[in-house]
Amino acid sequence: MDEFSENPKQESKQDQDDSSLDSLEGTSTVVETPAGQSADAGTPAPDGTGNTGNMGTSPQKPTDPHRGFLKRLFGRANIYLLLFVLILVVAGAVVVVAYLHSRSAQNNTNIASQTLSQSALKQLANSDVTVGGAQQTLNVQSNAVFAGQVLIRSNLAVAGKLQIGSSLSLAGIQVSGTSQFDQVQISKNLSVAGDAAIQGQLTVQKSLNVNGGGTFNGAVSATALTADSLQLNGDLILTHHISAGGVTPGRSNGGALGSGGTASVSGSDTSGSIAINTGSGAYAGCLVSLTFATPFHTTPHVIVTPVGSAAGNLGYYVNRSSTSFSVCTDNKPPDSATFGFDYMVLD
Image (cartoon, rainbow, N blue to C red; front, side, top):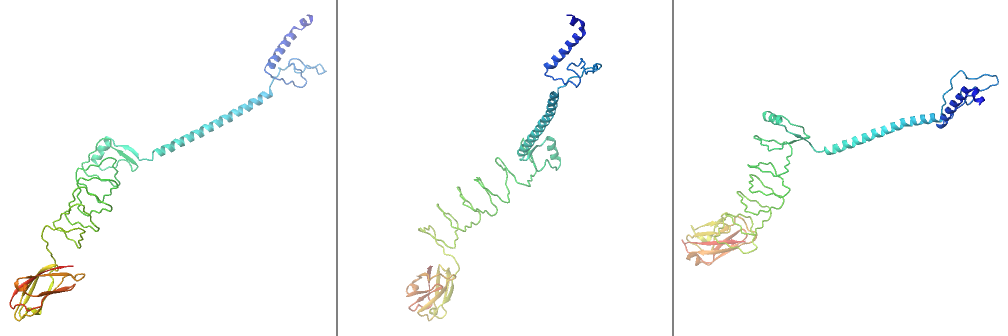
């Protein structure tokens, strides 16, 4: 007890040093002791000369070399990690912005729309102005009435029905689908490349020219029918007269008429009448010859019928060819007599 009482201050300092050491040990701190100094910072190290060392200076703060290295390592790593995260965020933002811009460009492929305001309508009514651009759309939500003319320099697309109250004038019309017209008036030519089906009555005010064949399942009614060639596969039924028209054939008198005798013809190549006036000294032979205005392809069939008793008493006959025919007699006709013949020529 005397030993502790002799140096109470030293005991108190020793306790403080021990507490400090315990505190450092509790934090796993290793104290590095300089050369020539004991583990106690306040206790002088004997060096054999009686010097007390660093008695006059305060003790140095203990340092942990391992803790400083880890702190520096984690400090630098945190900075790099933050930079890396920041780069990722910026890159992600750029990708998102580029994607949204691409979607917006795809959605804006259609023409941009623009609404016509009331002030723009007033400006249109008072002057000639341009509203919007070529890549914009003018939307009119309500009905629009144009008192004057409307000029469309490009194509016109109508999504709904097109109703025109008055006449429609078009330089050309092309219809790809089915169309229905109540009444159509064509002042010039109508050209149909494909088949045409007309359910109702067809009225043609002028000529109708058909280059190909025509098929009629019903009756054909015509005031006049002119055809270069007419072919009938069935019976020909006529309820009225047959009138054979055409150019009158040429005529030449025969010697059997006698002196001063004459002959005349009326009609056409198909049918007609021959008038005979004999003179004096008539004799057997050909009375008259007719030359066709249009020659036949082959020698036609000629039918001659005498008119009058004088002609009926003659022994008449016919000479024929593809270009002409002659009416002759095999006995002497009476002098100064008038009679005639009717003829019909069929190919």
